[in-house]
Amino acid sequence: EVQLVESGGGLVKPGGSLRLSCGASKFTLRTYFIHWVRQAPGKGLEWVSSISSSSTYIYYADSVQGRFTISRDNAKNSLYLQMNSLRAEDTAVYYCASEGDSYGPYYFQYWGQGSLVTVSS
Amino acid sequence: EIVLTQSPATLSLSPGESATLSCRASQSISTYLAWYQQKPGQAPRLLIYDASHRATGIPARFSGSGSGTDFTLTISSLEPEDFAVYYCQQRSIWPPLTFGGGTEVEIK
Image (cartoon, rainbow over all chains, first blue to last red; front, side, top):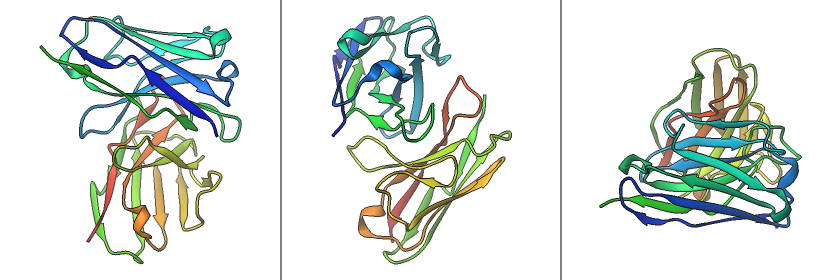
């Protein structure tokens, strides 16, 4: 069974930084666009950022542009999200999500279990 | 940016009843729409892609329809495990990839 596993979440003060990681098992990330999606407590889903297979194309939501950096290491089958200048409104569960072979690009076929990021003083 | 508006926000139904969920796009997105189910404490799960195609393993009681700006997810006879929150998502014009605000299907 395909698994995506996030790590690196936790409690951080406003203005602080955090780096999320996402690894995959039984699935090779390197050929796919992969994404970060977040969900604030009790709220809906919000797309955060996406990166193409060779890192040529990188996109961010306006709400995180200039503060977050997405990257990937295909040799390590991993995805990262460097989050700087964190704000209270960045508090959320962060999911990594990947497209797959079956359903076409830019749909989220596989999801991690989520990593909680809490920004609070 | 494509805005997706889901209605109703909450649907109160009994097991065995049929559920009809709506997703409206702010401009035409052809059939580039997906539906996800999310249960408390879990990641979302892809149910329907390209408006009307069921993902592998999704029961036949789930069906999607629509094109352009108006889309519908129908659950023909609710099972206890179907009570959850449902989101639509478009991939037609991005960035950004956008989600609707969600519809909660709750037990009446």
